Length: 223
Image 1 (cartoon, one colour):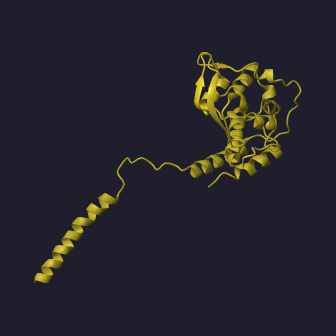
Image 2 (cartoon, one colour; image 1 turned 90 degrees about the vertical axis):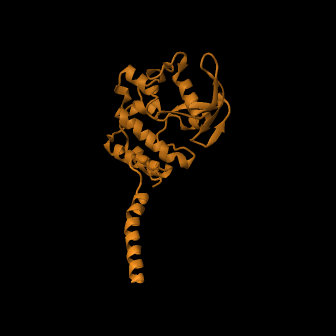
Image 3 (tube, one colour; image 1 turned 90 degrees about the horizontal axis):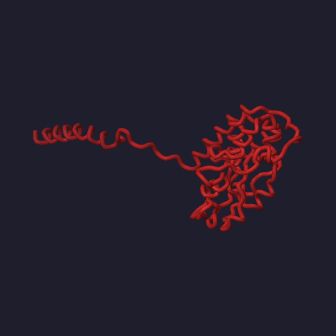
């Protein structure tokens, strides 16, 4: 009888404990979702870029006739008082940036993702148009209004403007991904997704060689 009574008590305690354990094991309601890792974010960006790339018109490049840098950018547009677009990008991309009364950076530290260099002087960096202005002209911007070309050249919303080393910017020039890629392979995924995002937003065309080059670069997106 004693053995039977103890067995019944153990069974009852077990049944009572199970719901408590289940409640403890269950995640709390409204718990914050797990943060995505860099690898997951890069893989998702690459997948989205592939979908956007399929939607871009494939066409032969237009003539460069009539192109001039001034057709896009007589000067950098102004934002927030005395700060122009270039100064805004340098402040955004730099570390410990100090500016004078005219908003011009006088001190700071900048990283160039194209070649992996850290630069301590504003004179060593450039603000690069990811899709070069001349390249955009041949991809369809030739038919745009002056106002739209100016908006493109000063776009702070899309990933069109980035701080890079002066030497990398000179090496790139007005070339597309079929002719030039960042020397730092680790930046290929970001470069390709940025290029495609800009072209997709502005409905610019791509050439067949350009499309192949972009797809090859997207293969470096981890995931």
